[in-house]
Image (cartoon, rainbow over all chains, first blue to last red; front, side, top):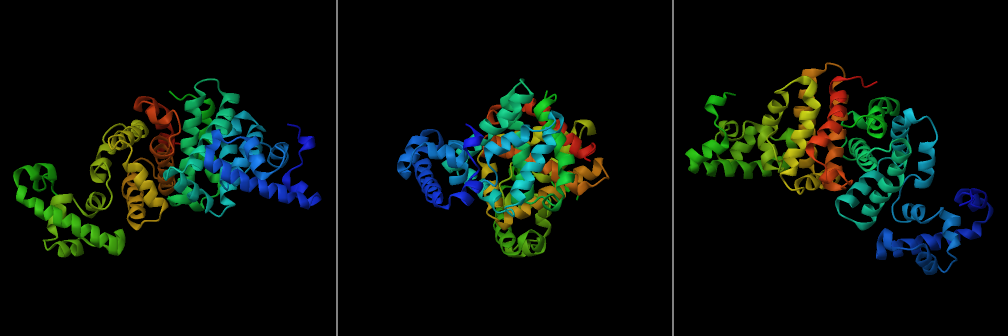
Length: 204
Length: 204
């Protein structure tokens, strides 16, 4: 996909407010089709057809099926495609700390409401939440891992995911004091090396 | 408390089956009183009075308020008092691995049903689950931490709790493949050093 042809929704919104109708129609259609068919079963073509627009509009407004899913079905406080490129942008040896900082900054911005909702959905076996979990681990975390470590990328990604999910539980759900009020710098220093070892270090 | 005067419930059950009435009455009274007053507000005296037995029976049958709480209100697959003494029994430098092994062995034995139920209760702000969480962190984890590290025990305990909760999420709730089917030895080697650093290592 060419970024030159795909301004961010924010920029596009400013220039072509009428296009919001297309975006809103796609979001509504996406919620329906993902709900009916699950993440894997839903196609961009089917979503666009339901919205009555051209399939190219999905890339244009959302950057693809994955990002549309995240924005339509689950209120992620970040764009997964953007997240992946942000994480890869910087020294490999600081990747663990970058993940901690990005995770906490993004979910802190929702004032703690979005992460518990996601946990409840996953614990309740809601299909959209399970699909999101698979998507974030397979398409974001595993991609990060494969860039830095050829050795057991699935296990390394799952280990990272365990500590990341645990941070969310500690800060937003179960509230393990003093975790919720501890500064991001302190947590990046404490938890960053854990993720760094899971990503690039010895794990046996 | 004197262990000589307090055989385990299992032994006592064998020798004095009639006593089971007392034990059952205490469990029922405990569920009521903890539910009404919360963990901190409930007293052993009030629970025993509700059950119509002497307060000494709580120590006799359960080893104290904490263990009664765990057994009455939440179906923990271990006895917290026993857990604490098991964890402290062994080399300090293997404490991280011991915690991983004890955690996975205990919850694996419930075939995965008990941990998701606990997470749902905590995410749903059920008082008993929140009290259990406080109890496990304050009375078990923080006690372990204070034995090995005088430096910031609350933060170290919360960091440990974050990785322990994350293991539970990865193995029993969200199922981050291949975490659920990975052997305990592999996970002890991978995650043990994380807990060890949170317990005794540099965290800033």
